[in-house]
Length: 421
Image 1: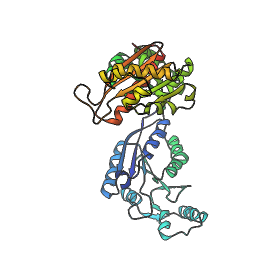
Image 2: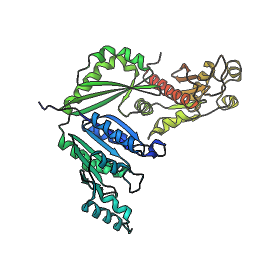
Image 3: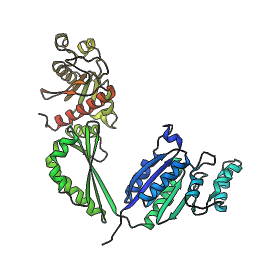
Image 4: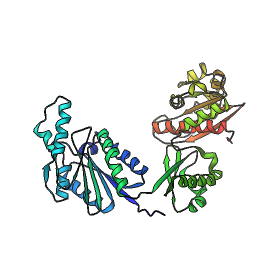
C-alpha cells in the first residue's frame, strides 16, 4: 500500500484592486479547483493589498499552515508592485538580473514591434534564491522557491498567464515532489427541503460513512447540495465506494433528489418532459418571465416548452388569460382561487399537458397584514387536477423571484413524477 501525507496549499492574491472590488479574484477559485483534481487540499485563501507589512505577515502565516504557497499578483514593473522585492526580503536574499529571463522579455517585445524599456528590463531581475520559471505569455516570470521544506510559487495575476504557468510548470512540479492521494467528488442535488431537515433525515447514514468519505452540506437558493468526497489510492474504488453510499441514502431522500454534480433543476425538468413526451406552459405574474427564462435557457427546450404569458395587471389576467373578474375582486390576484384559474387557463390556451402559474407580492412594497411581502401562490395544473402551494418568503424582491422559480420548477418536477401530495 502506498502511504501518502495530506498535502496542504495556501493561495495568496495580492493587489489593492482586488480589495477595492475593481477586479474579481477568479484566480483563486481556478487554482483551488486544479489543486483539488490532483489531491492537494487548499486550507486557506487570502487577499492582501499592496502593503509591505500585510504581505510579509501573510507570507509568515501561510508558511505555518501549508506545504505549498501559491501567490498571484504584484509582479508588474512599477513601484506599487511589491511581491518580488518582498519575497527577496522574506527569504533574505538579493535581486539580480537573470540573462535567460532578460532574453525572454526582449523576445516578447520584439515580436510585438515594441521597444524594451529600462522599466521592462527590471522584469528580468529576480530574487537570487528563486528558480526562474518562464512565462510564455507575458513579461513577468514565475518564481519558484524551496525553503524549510515548503514550496513557493509566485505568478502574475493576469489569469491566462497564471493558468499557463500552473498547467505547464506548477502542477507537474507538485506531482513530481509529492505522493498524492486520488480524490473523487460527487454532488447530490436536492430541492424542497431545508438543510436542518435534510440533515435529520440522513443523520444515521452520515454517522456510518466510511472514514475515507467526507460529507459537506452546501445550501443555496431553495436547494441543498450534498457533496461526498472520497480520498484514497484507486480512483475506481473511490467512485464505487461513493456510489454505494449514494444507493444507501437514496431511499431516505429520493423525493428531494433532482440530480447530480452540475445538473440544474431546469435541465432535470426538461429531461423529464422529454422522456414523458409532455409539454408545459406558464402564466407568470410576480416572477415576470424569470421561470420562462430558466426553462428556455436549456438547449432543445422548444421540444417541450409551448410558451408563456406575463399578465401582470389584473385587467390582463382577466382579458387575456380568462381569470374571472369575480375571483379577482373577491380573493385578489395573490390567492389560491386566482392561481388555480391561471394554471388551468394557461394549460388550455397553449394546448399543454402542464400549466404552471405564479402570483405574489415580490416586494419591497405592496404587502399588508393579511398578505405581507413575500406571500406567493404557485400552481401546477395537469390531468384534470391543480396542485397549489402557498409560499412565505422574504422582504427581498429578487430573492423572492428566484425562490419562487425554484419552487415552481420543483412543483413541475414532482407533478411529472406523480409525487405531489
